[in-house]
Length: 221
Image 1: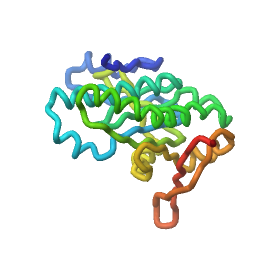
Image 2 (image 1 turned 30 degrees about the vertical axis):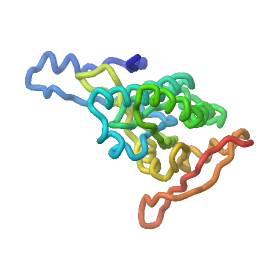
Image 3 (image 1 turned 90 degrees about the horizontal axis):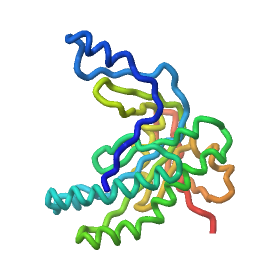
């Protein structure tokens, strides 16, 4: 099965009509929605993909990505998330309901999504083995903060921009393989949840005088 992204309920931009009416308008036009909101954003990325993929033929490479991306997307949807896009061998997603409240329990789905991805690692590798494909490992990162939603005139899909998106990309490499890390902004709210343990493992420099703590998340025994 090939995963197909669904578009959320976002107001149609007048930019599209402008392009049709004015041939001089560029074919690619970006339009940001007027309002921005805070969301939980997540990223799952394959570890050492360059070495693995270099050994695969194009048909096997396509199958490899299909299994990984579809498996991750199904988990995201299970916990109320929405896949934004795949970026090479990673998948970017967010949780629309996380904008509705600052209550920590509204962020549980974000953590459960990441932990479930980790727990499915063995099953995904079984599928890959059945297809005579090499096993994979991956890292997961998540953060919370204000993002802007963008659409282009050439697509009905959305994209998101903002600090949590950037931080997810930067802190992802702070995770060991098959684990999840979260940024400090998400940790401040999620730490109230009793089902998880948090360990500060690193910090990311965001300026000469500022560092951004990173936390590994695990289920409590």
